[in-house]
Image 1 (tube, rainbow over the protein chains, first blue to last red):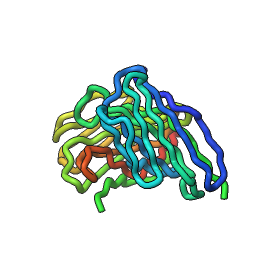
Image 2: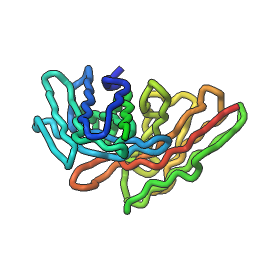
Image 3: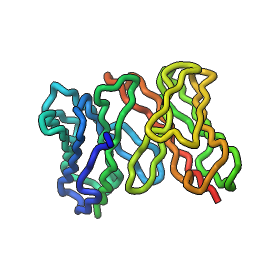
Image 4: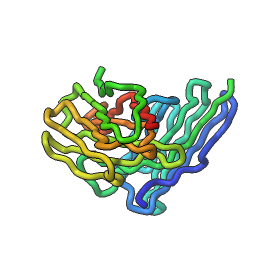
Length: 112
Length: 114
């Protein structure tokens, strides 16, 4: 399967702590994206990191990409209860038309 | 704000019924997608469309068909619903947003087949 593998599957932390989620693929990574999903809702795009980038920041989000290891990580710093959600990585691979292959997701719970 | 609208948030159908899930986007995007989401399995692509009347199978097209008669509308059809099609269905369109080509998702349609 080309589906991404994410770990951990679930993460429970206290407000103010950092949360790190990891994602890996068996196929080559191209334009790796991260999405967030609140319970029972659709996914919302968070950040995209291109194949020639190694690190990218957006507010409290930091994404790294290692194309040789076909892996990426998402770090959320100083987490808040409102960050509680599922987080998915998505790989464009070598495809066109915006066809993405998603990871299985990490469920993040941030306790107040 | 840009929008992808799925007409039904919750549906309950009986085995054998024909089911239509409608999706409309207002961003003039060419590419649209239908995914299903199941616990532990993540999102799996059912079908996608890269232009009006054009469609391609995704990873799990069996038991589904699609229709794209107009650019803004992409419909998912279950010809004869079965209990293993109970799932969350997510529609998305692909296009430029914030300087990058990304997917914009609808809120989802949760289908229960009894």
